[in-house]
Length: 203
Length: 203
DNA sequence: TGTACATCAGTGAACGCGCGTTCACTGATGTAC
DNA sequence: TGTACATCAGTGAACGCGCGTTCACTGATGTAC
Image (cartoon, rainbow over all chains, first blue to last red; front, side, top):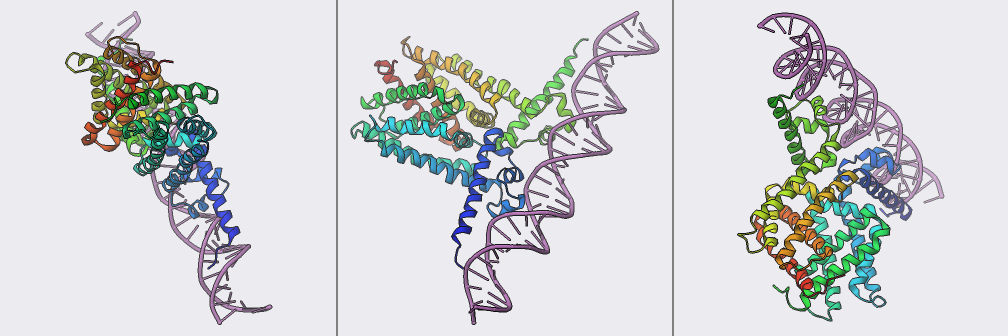
């Protein structure tokens, strides 16, 4: 049996609508409170059609983590990399990218931050995997910034945590505070790295 | 009308049972998914009795933030302060206190961490207030550790964020990893502060 | 002291409602020959 | 080419169930006099 491109496209359109609707509703009342019918209604399909895309809400949530969050975090890395040349530093580039994405997709970011310590183990595990990728990219950027100087894992960890926190602040407090948030974050990272450069942080 | 101490005590016992039941259930399926009847059942009261204590689940959640999280964070500070003399450093004392409390009350910590970026604005605001208290205490501890040397806000902020993250890791990964988590956290804080002591972090 | 009344936490019955899920169906498209 | 059959996303009707909320009630305790 061949696949019909139009059919496939329509199917993906509806799946995407379900994911989008879920993010919007989750930002308002929390993912755990959402029902299958509520999401289907928001995505303009019959409740029973939901099952053509996901077995239940948990499966949809996993798709949100793996596709949505995965795409976001990979975008941070890729867009920051392509901006490396122009920007003053790769770290600043990745931070700017992260904060911009945060205010562009606040619902996705809130979902990521809330579910990172949320009740569903599958979500936590998938997010940890995604964030590990981000961490590797951040470590690279830090080492480039230090002209190849080795950066210990615990410093890269700290930078990622502070980045995520800053994104959360940007989402909670709004776009107009973004400049102040970025400055604070940059100062925090500079303090962390000055310790490393002088060899104070090595294990 | 006088208040009967026995009656009052019984009332508080049931209120506490509701809060405890909510934390347990929220750790398993997420606060937003909880219903009034489910919580009442777990607390061994009739569904209608719930209304004698809270108007709805959101009000109960606010009590959880203000009483529960408030008590936890104040305990961190107080118990760390009383241990200051014996411990090598006030910062180490407060960290140890935090990580210990995290593994002792994992449900409460998961609730705090998840709702900090959760969907309910009232929860976020109340938690921000509570964490501001913790931040002030941490700043004090840091300055004591630096023999009165001034510590900028952004460093205290970073330390608190890294502390909360470490507590989250302890809850997610279990007690046996606590030593490694504490060591990583201490290294991160040392790196941050070495930057400050040398004057690299001031605004 | 006794008697009448007020307060108030907890309760069981009952309500209407939205939920998740099942089922058989439609209609469009692809395949066999 | 035409005809018979397979696939599959979306659908409306229907189910039983647990939900939040209301209500009038109980019974224990406090207050007035």
